[in-house]
Amino acid sequence: MSNARSHLAEAARRLLDAIVTLPDAADEEIDAAADAISEATRLLGGDALALGPGYRAVMPADRLPRSALVGEENPIAPPATWSLRGERIHIRVRFGVIYEGPPGYVHGGFIAMAFDELLGLTNVQLGRPGMTGTLTVKYRHPTPLYREVHLESWVERMEGRRAIVRGVLRDGDTLCAEAEGLFVALRPEVALAYFADPGGADTAEAPHPDTPLGGPA
Image (cartoon, rainbow, N blue to C red):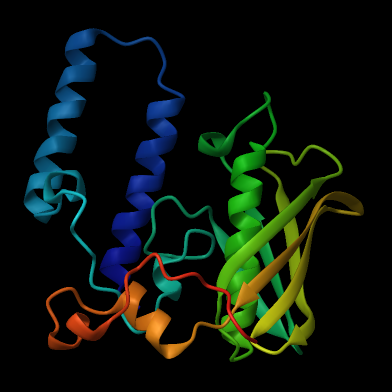
């Protein structure tokens, strides 16, 4: 893991928080800050919007540092620590202001994203990677901002290429949300359609990316 990239991501997280909580400031000060951010972006040489919809990022073999939930190199990931205990994933996470929905609480969409990432991570860590087929989230109690909450997930059962994975989110003893996901291990030809290098020689043989995830188990 790159310490420099982690440092950059943490600085970006603090920037996002600062933008959302921006106090009254003169337009000139805000414009100056925007120019400084634009210059930093230029120095990094990255601008995904300018690259267009056909751009596909090169995905490293280890995706974990770029995870949207526990990725230390991903600025949208909240501060989190995780561990694999037996066959269960445990995550401690603190959601900040950029995840706010109702005042003082986490937006339900971010909770759904966290569950999708958590359940998928569980599959990967147990050697059963797959893509999300369905995800059902039940919201039981508002999830507070700024306080460490606990996520836990496990594989409920396997059905051929399909895995049923469950997870819960708790604030202390309070159940805030629970989720169930169906994940499908891709057939090799479908994986090729979705993830082959666009510039590679083998993509001409790949089926169209609209190939469904399902099919015979």
